[in-house]
Structure formats: C-alpha cells, structure tokens
View 1: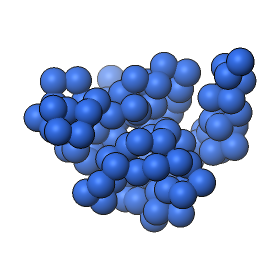
View 2: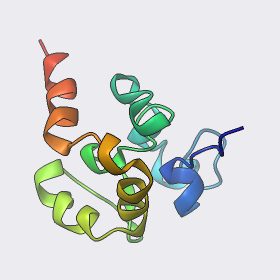
View 3: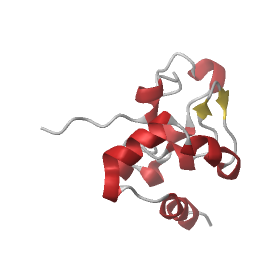
Length: 105
C-alpha cells in the first residue's frame, strides 16, 4: 500500500485547514478550497500545489499574489519535498497556473 502524501497544511501544521485552530484568526486557507488543483501530485485540492495559490499562510504571515510569493516558495521545505517525491511526474508551475486561468471568465 502506498504511503499517503501529505498536503501542505498537514506538513506545515499551519492550523488553517477546515477545523484548524487558526481559522478563526486568519481564515480558511485558499489551498484547502482550490478544487481546480484537486489531485495534483496526489493532493487534496491545492494541498500539494500551494505555491500557485494566493493567500496561503507561510513564514508566519498570509502570502499575497503568486508573482510576489513564488521566490519564497521555491525555497520552501514543503515545495522541495513535493518536487523530490514527484520526480519526473512533478507538474510544472506554468501548467498549474494555466489550469487556474482557464476557469476564469
């Protein structure tokens, strides 16, 4: 049986997942709700592609737009773990970004 892959909120223990202890203070993390990325890297919603989602909670604060946060994300231990786990199956960020943009009106 394959080992369950961790979503970002499980790995980082940020408390912004549904039922998390910090939802009342910072709100529900958008990565937990981003259904267009469900299943990417075997994650739940954007749980294994959080670097593409604005408003995630990293480094002790809510992160803004993709363009502003991606440099930080590339150095993140979770991002590096997903990259290593997925190897050649890692879906590049540009493709993930296109998935989100295709759904816009």
